[in-house]
Image (cartoon, rainbow, N blue to C red):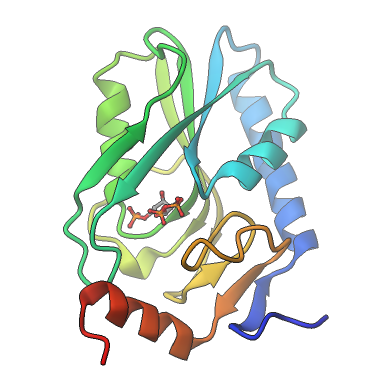
Length: 192
Ligand code: PRP
C-alpha cells in the first residue's frame, strides 16, 4: 500500500480498527440492555467516522447527535480553554448520554464536555473514546469504553486530521515527525 508522503507508517489498520469498534459496540449493547433514550453525541469533527461505524454496529436503540468544539493553542502548550461552536440539537436532560470521541489527548475537551453535560442533568453520562494518549494527559477524565492506547505520536486518518487533511484515510497512520514538528512551530509562532 502506498502511503501519502506525510505519513510514516500505519499504526492501526482497517481490520484492527473494525474489530475493536465491533467489540466496543458489543460492550455498549450488553451494558445498556434496553435503554429508554440513549443519545450518542459525536464530537466534531474528528469523531464522525468512528461514530458512524460504532452506531451501525449497535443493536440497542439510539439517537445520534453532534457537538462541535474548538480548543485554543493546539501546539506544545495547551491552555485548556475550549470553545463551544455548535451544541447538540436534542435536549439531553433526562436522557442517557454517551459521548463519542475520536481521541483523548490532554483531556481538556472531554473534561469540558463532561462538566457541560452533567450540568444539564442527563439520566446517565458515559464516554466512549477510540484512541487515548495517556502520556499527554493534563487532566484525568473517566473513559468508560476505550478502543486503543497509543504512544505520544501525531496520528491521522479515520477522522483524525493534520491541518484538516487525511481525515478520510481508512487506517490510522503516524505523521512523519518533521511534518508535525513544523506544524507545532507554526501554531506556537516559533517557526523560522
Ligand atoms: C481533537 C479531538 C478531541 C480533542 C482531544 O479535536 O477530536 O476533541 O482534540 O484533545 P484534548 O484531549 O487535548 O482536549 P480537535 O480540536 O483537533 O478538532 P477536530 O476534532 O475538529 O479535528
